[in-house]
Length: 213
Image (cartoon, rainbow, N blue to C red; front, side, top):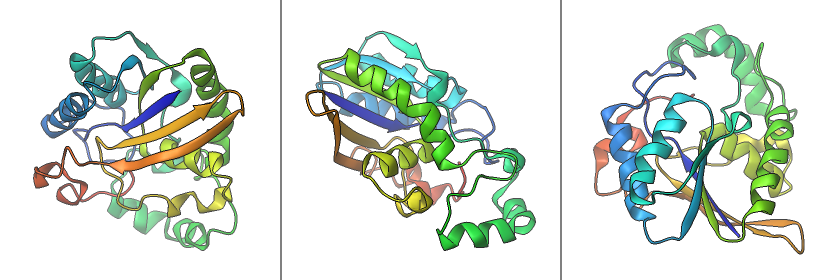
């Protein structure tokens, strides 16, 4: 079966991991993603319980008209003390943490928050439930670090290196996993596919200029 992981559309606040609605650009991204996937045989859409992911699923689902289920374990990594801060504030206050993180020797948790390994421990049991339950194709509206951490795990990488996956990871992009039930195996078939957004430079991440969300 196929799992299409959709990074949520652009949110209306640039601060780190605040639970806010999509911006107008984010709604456009979600709708363009739904339109792109209209004939891909989506039978169910899942999302995290964070507002930007729920709204991404809602707007994309206007093209699919399938059931939508919210799974809290699909929410973004908890950035702890960084949440609600700007990129500039994070770089100033947590520069020592960032320097240590850049070494990629240990999967250290964010101060007061989660590590990528902890995210995987909460996410993978529910992802496996979804994969085992379906035979066709499903969409999952979720988050950037969530997708990168899950990919790091299913590809058998050192979890300390999750940040090597997708430095430029577009909002509204599509990542495709295949799950072979007989082998209990995931394969990565597509990553950060944003061909449907390329005609609109204002919708690309470079036009927004943030790192953590």
